[in-house]
Every structure is written in C-alpha cells, then in structure tokens.
Image 1 (cartoon, helix red, strand yellow):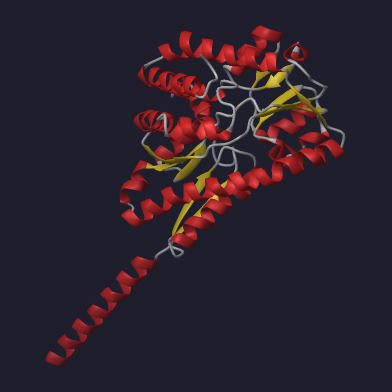
Image 2: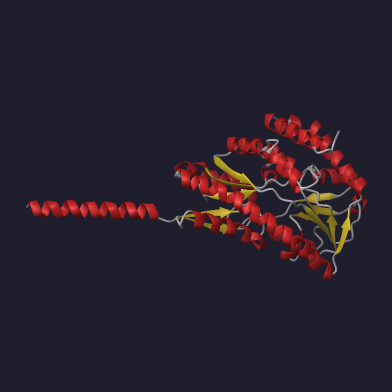
Length: 339
C-alpha cells in the first residue's frame, strides 16, 4: 500500500515537472498586422525574427500586410479587443479618434531624420503620442520607428506646386488641404494595394507613399512618370503596439524583448533604406522616371502653411494637440526652421 502511494507521489511529481517544463517552453503565437503594403512584409518579418530569437522561440509572430485582417482605421480597435494581438500603424491613420495623429501628415516640419528623432525622443513628441493612444485604446505602445520618407509620384512631370493643379492625389490632411488651397488639387485616400490600379486607370494622378524603394517594389514606376524631391514628410511616426490585456500577462523579460526588438528593427530599417533608396531611384530613372525637385520657395511655402495650421487649428483641438504643437514648434525653432 505504501509502495503504491509512493508511486503515485512520484508520478504526480514527474507530471508537475513535465507540465512546468512544457509551460516554460510553450510557444505563444500572435497575429500582427502592419499598415504598409505586402511588398514591405520583410521589415516586420525581421521584427518577428528578432523577437523569436530573443525569446528562445517562445514568441512567434505571424505578419499580415495592411488590410489583410482588418481595415487600417480599425486596427487599434481590433488589437484592443484581442481580435489580433499586435499592430503597427501611423498616427494619422487614426486621426478620427486620436486628433493628435493628424500632425504626422503636416509637410516639411523637419529637414532630416536626425531632427525627427530628436523631436520624438528629446522634445517628448513620442511620449505625447504614446499617452494619447494608450488613453484612447486599451493598447501598449512599444516604440516608434522614425522614417526619412514621404515621397510623391505623379503620372506627369511635376516640378512645382502649381504643376499639381487639377490633379487627384492620394494624400492625407492637412497636406491635402494645403495643395487644394495652393494649386486646386483634390485628394483621396486608398490602401497601398489599390494604388497601382488607381494610377493605371487615371483615377488618381499622384500618390504619396513611403519612398523610392517602397514605390519601386510596388511597381508604381510602371504607371507614373515623375518622382518629386525633397521628401515632404520627414515626420513619420509609425509605432508598434500590443493589446493591453496581452501585455499585462507577459513576464517582464518578454515585455523587454518586445520593446528592444522595435529599437533593433528601427536601426535595421534605417540602414536598409540608406542603402536601397538611392539604388531604387537609379533603377526608376533607368526605366524612364523623371526625378524632379520642388523649388526652395515652394518648400518654404509649405513649411509656413504647416506652422500656420499648427498654431491656428491643430493646437486648439485638445490638450494632447496643444502639447504636441508646443513640442514641435520648440524643436523647429531650435533647429532654425522657424524664428
């Protein structure tokens, strides 16, 4: 009898050890949808790879492109609800529910990636975005991915703002409003997978997107004629985020991995673009794309429009917008972009 009890205890102990071991090494599989086209899946697959390796295979992230699971405007809601566990989006895609996000689409706030990074981290813009989105949704913002991007391509040669007269451009406010006021251009917003067809059918004649490499990978050079420099939107603040419910259940080491992986992937993406952007521009030129530059006076006009909009409109939309406006204007003044 004692022997049987001892065997039962031993069996139970073995079961508990095995159960604990299984639990410690169990694989967690999450879904993550980003806000870019399928041609850019590799960036987020690289993030997933970093997380998987740092977690010793305990976290696996399956990556989905914009619109594959949910519309980008509903992405924060769906992650908060647990329909999927992680996301990557741009603040201006959510401007309807988080007004501070519209700041991202104001052109020519900064002159380069260094200034943008300083605005996010040294001037506190990232913290303002983080607080605003976490207050609105039940999500945890993991980090920001600064981008030296925001390019325009057209189905005709464009050398100035006035050349955009009468064009229908895939672009968001407030930039869309500025171009309407200055050139009579109209605007629409489409997902990345719709752009090629819309350009080929003359539904739109211009498109704003991430940069030469992204546009080349999407084959937009096949249905356009010109690429406009300089980059208008060196103020992209896309961010990675996770369901608050999922986050709160994670051990501290897994939380740390998710945050540090964003930082590592941002460095990877910056180096990738530094190498590939000029190559993509060269390839597009070889295929007939005309690379043009906006005159300095046009750039200054758009900068002035952005500052005027920030002061007279954006800053009055609530406490987060006021904080963001103050941070951006302080940064622009320190960088010598405004007086």
